[in-house]
Length: 338
Image (cartoon, rainbow, N blue to C red; front, top):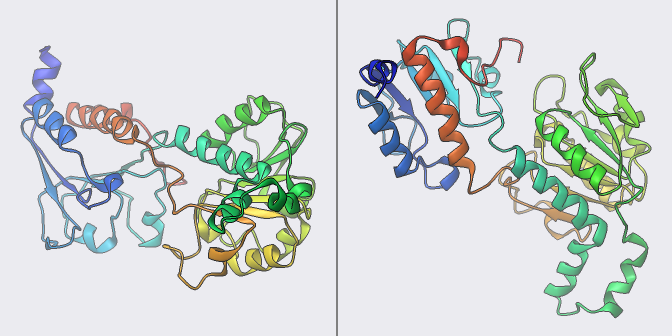
């Protein structure tokens, strides 16, 4: 053990953590708890905001998890750092949490490969009519004769136009996949952002109706905030082509779901691949359940068996920096403007 490692291991800290739920994505693995206890023997992890555990005043200066609220923060008078187990940090705004004196870090990068794989699955699945075959399978009619009714829907990705709305880490990797499939790629991104790729067109969010008009596939990767709320509205869906597919693995709140359902019902677009919804889990009464031109997954686009390995790398690095006093070296620092 080096002097620095010994110095860090002797540092004391209390971490409150909400990652003690039943779902594996929100359940801190025993191997990671053991790893932290070995590397940082004087660091204590306390469950918080977990069913069956009361929220009480804590000496913790670190919060680790996904479900921080203003009520929880009020019980942490010594809180100095929040590390989100998620990529998004919109809860800070949703719950009006005062972060002026807090360090905020996220788990940006942990779900990029998963999200890209999910987007690709939707693109290729919709193109090849996998959703149609599945519907026929459930009816016991999965044969060429019955599938023939969808002949005109079946596409090749090569030569198709893909519009990526929300060009960040996921979009950057997805571009490579689309190009490998022979697709033409356009993007919607923030103004004055530099790109490493050459695109057929670059749009801003205000130009969304124009951007979607020439796209065969529209992939929504937008985060949820004031600017993106319900940005996919009736006008935007009306601007899409009748053979186009809408894919949403961003946030459900960015879409006017009633307008999307109308677009699917009335043939404004050919179909959709949806991982996120306005209300989650998807209400049992939603028409989306029974639509034959829709692929559905339950907000799992970012899931991967590799998640906790990546989460471990980020959090242990950041905790080391925190205890060492080198906060500026932490990964995924979220600025006030994010």
